[in-house]
Length: 369
Image (tube, rainbow, N blue to C red; front, side, top):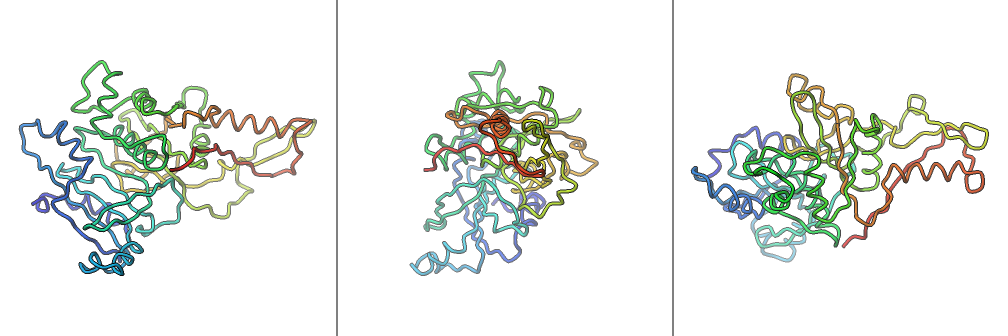
């Protein structure tokens, strides 16, 4: 029933990034918990008729048959080759719903990301998948800001015992305590609203603003958290628009040319020693942007590059970063880095490295489930 309305470009921009040899299992009607939440809290009350059901597309690395779902040997085969799923919503034209796809399903998979494990029931068979949650905005019940909050909570809620996944209506309920105007239909959220929601969900959030003393160092701060395995929400903007994305990883390191990498100085007693901050080594970062396919890659200095030079996103910069810190992490990463450098340069406890040494900074994460 939904197929005749689907605009191919919305699906193609995802499918074009996937391995061409994948096999799919299609389930319809499918009850998606996230879309049903939006349906009952918003779409069901509209004058136009919206369908309650979705389509779910599951991906497999090799050929699958109906019999594989009904035998022990077949189940083992499915578990070995399962690569994730994508939900198609009846919210035209923004039809890409909740998805969780293994990076091995993509043509380009030379990257490292924050990911969590999930058990998914496909045609009655429980299969395990690793990935980072992705969803497109529907522009009415959820915008880019709500999708970033949802995906961050989905990640932490499935990975750590201190958190639990949430739904769009719950995000709205939480923000109603903070907002002075209605939140449905959505007009997007501010940086403070995103931070407030995450704080209500149990995080000790930190906000870093480009205009608040951090300047170009904001890109290094992002890199520190990504190296620590902590996804961050970035607010990107130019004179025309504002947008929110989740930064979740980076491309696999290649052998860098150290002659061209920025050098910093550390004073040890009377000597100035050159060193390389690991976050200054150039690399592309992996993002989930609700207007783009999962696991897209960008330069942090040009976050709107995938939209093209003629789009409204031309000239965007990362203006602020919201970090969902575990509330028992009391030392944020910038202070942790400065403390480490102070110890290294201390006359009693420090150590005199040779010129050109590399230093990286990571925060300790909470225990997993």
